[in-house]
Image 1 (spheres, one colour):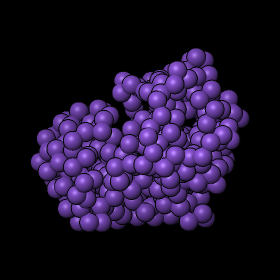
Image 2 (image 1 turned 180 degrees about the vertical axis):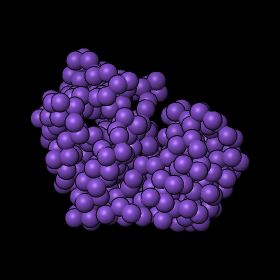
Image 3 (image 1 turned 90 degrees about the horizontal axis):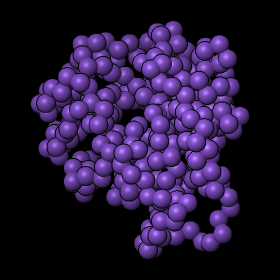
Image 4 (image 1 turned 135 degrees about the vertical axis):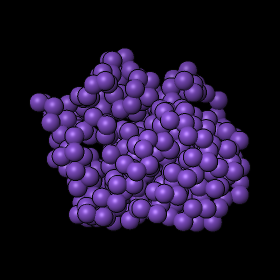
Length: 315
């Protein structure tokens, strides 16, 4: 399962362009994505007003229902009560989401027991299943394996987007003995190929706005060479703050009307855009050799496709 957390396109005067958003949603589904996320970090959700958030959610939900794709909405703040109210409000949407992607409380660092209590409260208030968004390099809150399993045991918590900036001992242990009925989705674009190889159910990937079909191919085949190349593309797309490079590349390809982002983000530089475009163009070329299987030896990294550094991570 490859899910795309959609950007929010802006028009020439800075307005939300729902027509471009709808076209982009259909495009990634045509290319093999199986789900869409509205109002994730990549959507610049924090920079949208209430009316814009409603318009984005309605647009993405309508496309998902028309296409039979999974529809997820990003929800969450550092306050349990506020997040519970936002979740309860999902019941009034024209299209009820299949899940809510809810971030571990950020900045407050409530400790593992506080995180578990937070999600127990939210699951009881939510009209839809919850996917925990564990992104510790943004939230400042690490979670050990025991805490991850405690979250998985909460009724109504059905999955996790795992984005710690590493393939760490916790995710290896979780995937090695997965709780029944609990989905684990990769969330770091650079490490997603490795998590898929370890048995993750899929991934929520901003870089799958681009080379969507190749991400779907990787999920289906476990092709190691392709995994290295997609990891390099992910690193290039996150060389500057998300989603600035993604928007720059989408605009360069004529897929959105402007590369605009809202403050405090600044537009991506030309060097970052062009480096990502070069990798994307190479990925789109026809394969000249049979795809490697999951059991084949991994190729050495080439100068054109360096192994990405963890410093480039974001999601």
